[in-house]
Image (cartoon, rainbow, N blue to C red):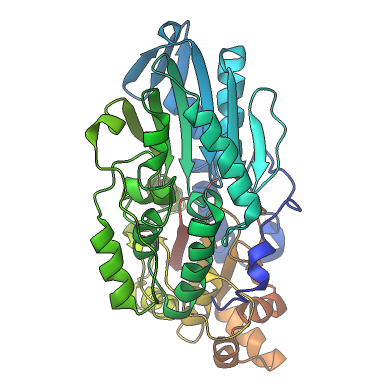
Length: 440
């Protein structure tokens, strides 16, 4: 959704309180003004519950004596002199809390970088800016790189790689961060996809695109990957700091030229196999977890659920309209992804609110639509929106026009006046956006 490129830089900061152990829609009852709305909110709540980092990691990792089980992988901890934890992104703090509670004094040291502050005993918690990196991010990245550089072949490093990490992990400032700021400001005006963004980001960094793995070599590395990428291309999460990059500097240069976003100083990512031989990257969480839980809840409520897509990236306004067309009686249509938005003015809103505006004039009696950011931050303090024919009627009564909200980029104000904004607070996870429509 249209955003103020200047003011957004400092929006996601330490004023956020630490999230609670249970992720909830805080204004559930205020929004549940009909039975259909209550059902939609219940379905969303099931999706949020399914991506709770604590619950997911406790099912993914277990410790039995000196053996660490991560999915089907087994690591003997007694063969390592030190165990370190490194984390980046919006799931870093929550995941680090789980790892520290599980491993305790087995952890030698650690550094994580999130958008929220924390207080752990053995892992240093740092806070950075998002979505545009600043000097705070590079200072934090330097601490992560220093820890990584000290790891030896006798050490194990658990890395938490999650959505938001591309902006948070930025080094060095004069090379990467200044170019990342330029890239972000270009992207919001042309509606770049996350794949395009992160392909370029890999090649203007000394820590992304496999560089972190290079710095960690020859340590044994476990990459715990929490995907916010539509379609779950795991190596693109946080621009792939522990993956061998399959793109080249020529790919990045060609992409920048095709998008007409100006000149960048590109560098090649590490291609030597030796840096990745002791790295085990493990996909831990993606939006399908949420969508499948939502489908299960919808079925329990008597609907026929359809997961339409896990990789929505089309124009936000067109996506909203599409959902009203896909809708069928007694069905729930579900999808995940990151709809694209082109910023034109300094309005206030987010992707999910934009999708809501796209659905607004097409919503029919009996339909209820909702779209939320899984991290609880739809570029504002709202997670997203819910709307139905009652919303349309109330807009008429208040003299509100959704076309004006689109042209002036004021989706947040529009839905705020209707009382249709969804609030969860920061969820401590990020698996892209979640969309659904229910028809009675």
